[in-house]
Length: 461
Ligand code: GDG
Image (cartoon, rainbow, N blue to C red; front, top):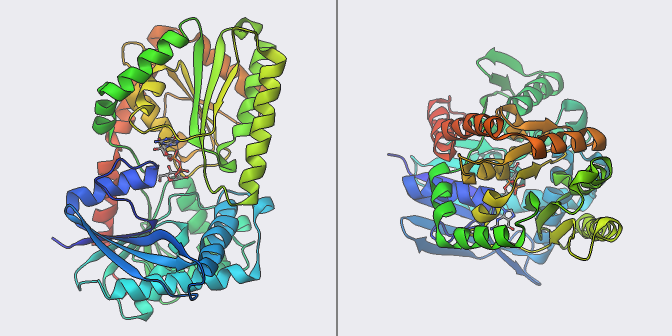
């Protein structure tokens, strides 16, 4: 069997309990197949030369970890700049938040070249290379330029926006050409796949060869939708472990007379947090029977804190939470419990299980694994209700969730009220459907179907 080589911005030791959807899913993939995981070490070398960085090798069980340091200049331009200041906002349909600084692209290109150079020294001829996410779009082109002939696949964890948005990126043609250096392009949902198909036909005159194969720039690329899932059994096991059990009991005791609404995410503007708080406020106003009872527990784990847009969001959240608690709170009831810290992964299932309603209401999300974790952690005999944004990739398949438009404050408040009032038989029936779905397309299915499609794709080398 060919060795699997995974390349992603960050690398996590698969033996450690990792936080974050990507780390969890990839650790799982490598654990099964064995192989090499390559990426940035997380170290920034002050005064280091641009485009240079030391390579570190480490064996983690059956998986070899190879990581490269970045100079401060490269980190600023590649990671904070182009990846998270241009591609992240634009791919989440937020042109208003993008900063098209001319210096960023040079650093983005340089780091992809650095990765390609270092990775080339580690590759074997029959490796299968799986590149992840927006940080590394040009990696295959850089590898091919250095003679790589292996099969190379790319999976985009975030959405791919429509043509009219993509084309606002000054370097979009270069990015599009780079995508054609892959043999397989994986997207989260059908909507992303359609956006890609329209975009490359309109902007590159790509020929549609049928079966989601496209020809342009003298290459043929196969594209597909591979919605990422979770390891349902592992998550169910976590749910029954001591840490989650303790969390569940503690919360149940503390909130015995309340109904918990739960939100869990990185503090990111794509997740629709201020909109959610305004909706919660509307719920309290419109349905006063929730006063003294409904409690929103919002975990917003710190993310990209060295970026201005993120610190603005933090301030906005603090002020919204303070205002709601000030306006509606009682001496013995606080409507919002806002926690801007990371919660240990082992405790999360206990929180999910104690919640009556999960609010997963991003303005735009590639997939959203929190929605799936919430489903996996429920007690089938007395499950909570999932309120899900129609703009999350997860909404394409999670039939059984209550879908909302997070921009529609009033409409969303009505739907949350419906969730709070939902009777047991309906909750059980919906949960059954949701559980069946996340079991069918779990993380093993995701990995297997992507790698199978990559093995069958025509090679561009
Ligand atoms: C990207 C895409 C796509 C959150 N807070 C804490 C914590 N988490 C964990 C959750 C979940 C993961 O982080 C978040 O995954 P999501 O999928 O919800 O969102 P992103 O981080 O934006 O991930 C997304 C994903 O990639 C995979 O392809 O679904 O659309 O944006 O696992 O549980 N974990 C811990 N403490 C927290 O406070 N331990």
